[in-house]
Length: 418
Image (cartoon, rainbow, N blue to C red; front, side, top):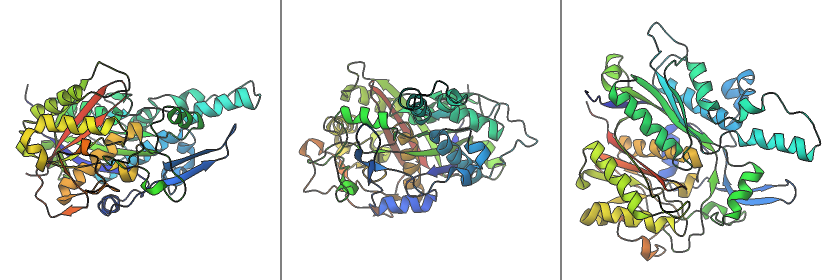
């Protein structure tokens, strides 16, 4: 079976920096943290954590009130990102003369509509109500975002929801890539969205002791991947979408091409639910390189999973050292979660866009709050990007996403070329 080249013709974001792609990447390169201190007065006691929100996002303005009212916030973020990517690709929002029966959606979310379910639980157990909104199920279901996207854009092909914890949207992008490359679908809209700010969700993550502490003064620098004094991850909300398109199909309609997706590798550590293992990550990295036809010397950048957890960061660096061998010491690596936080199921898509923009702009964003003096010796052995690098020749790059459950996903991208 002939394998087709897969172009990236649309990018869309709902991020803490807004939706402008250039501004998003510019702020990452500037090392600008979007982490703020979140305080809620939810019972039984206030929640006080570093968090990354999207305060400028207005669902009613972005989607229209009737449509927004049919969605939980995670789906609203996803739909807005999907619309932005679709428009960026120069595609009509309503079906045209060309049949879209083979065009599809692959979406990632770790949590789905937790806000809708939490409202229901509060109504039942706290507010004493005996009936819930009849929309609770359709607001909360994990496939709500991809279902709405398919309906609103008239996409009659596959509509998949992928829930693989923090690797959800990376897996969604990889599976969408495979469908376009095989010729099964000429166009796939893919990405992910998540909103982990439901009180119960935040408390659950807090109980795992993997979240960075912080107050109003220290929260912006709370997430410090690879630093010796790192204290954990910072949760965030967001949505990101990519339009993947058969290369010839894109050229035939005169589409602008941001970049090319060329490989995808997955694996499972199969050893522990929450403790990562380098061997599993190595398998995913090697699978992605093989799938892309890349040698170690061909990779010019890795956007790391880099959550700033005590165990996760050294394991990821160890896997990179093993896969890249002597090349590792000169392999640029950065973790943009240090600035935009960890959007769980949406993180892989946000970081995929950051990686595509790095290739497009020939620039590398840094790991914020990290410098040679604060680097953990256990995370040494790669070329950490401490400050942005511009005008660097970038040909190919990887984006890593590793998840609880031992699931690993690696995406490979190449700078656009004809």
